[in-house]
Amino acid sequence: MIYEKNSYVSGSMCDGKLKLSILAADEIVENAVTELMGDLGIDGIVAMEKYKAMWLIVKNNIRFQRRPVWREEFTVNCYISDHSAVKLNIDTIVRARSGELLLKARTELAAIDLQSGRIRKADTVGFSEDMENPVRTEGLEFSRFPKESGELVESVVVRSTSLDYCYHTNNIEYVRFMLNTYDVEHFKDHDPEKLEIHYSNQSFEGEKLNIEKQSTEDGDLFYVTRDGARITSCKVKWK
Image 1 (cartoon, one colour):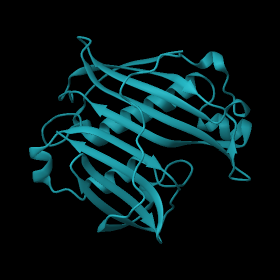
Image 2 (cartoon, helix red, strand yellow):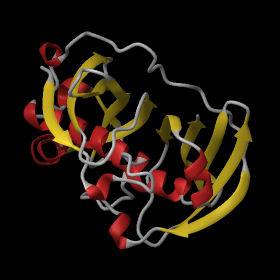
Image 3 (cartoon, one colour):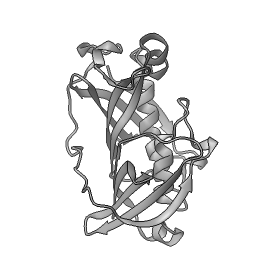
Image 4 (cartoon, helix red, strand yellow):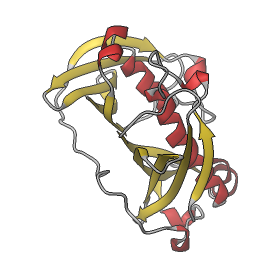
């Protein structure tokens, strides 16, 4: 199955350049993934109520070709491109009305049991192989991030508006925390080329998170930690 949605860049989705913001792009991908899963009848709500499990985004890799501008129309296509016993890979492609590629993404999902917290096999939470569209998009392979720490640049406390329906920190909020370490001049001078984020653990309301940063020739690495334990790892590459 291939999910498809036509949309446009609304004002709330724009950054200071009147282009689709990085956060809004991440939201488009996350919404496409969740709505695809809903159309397949295996979304998070079904997983919780029927299978006593919860889907988690494990990794997300977004590549930016061109960011559309305010009121520009675009089409989103999303499908399961690959799977293993315990993980699903979901590809999202966003194109302009002309067919021009705007951005592409790969999202890795896994399900955990609500009672034990252990990984569940995908076929125990409703997935079947006929749901897959085995066409893999090139250039979306996941990276391996270094294990060493970066320099502490900021600390944040998770507040209630950063939580999702499972009452842990929404995946997009981690991106917001990291992007907020840049000043506005940076965004005036740079456009994103790549955003890849790996989620290792969950965090909850009231917890203090430390944001560490390490700049390299190939982009900026971020690590979000809690009491020394890594919550997320992220790489942002700029044009």
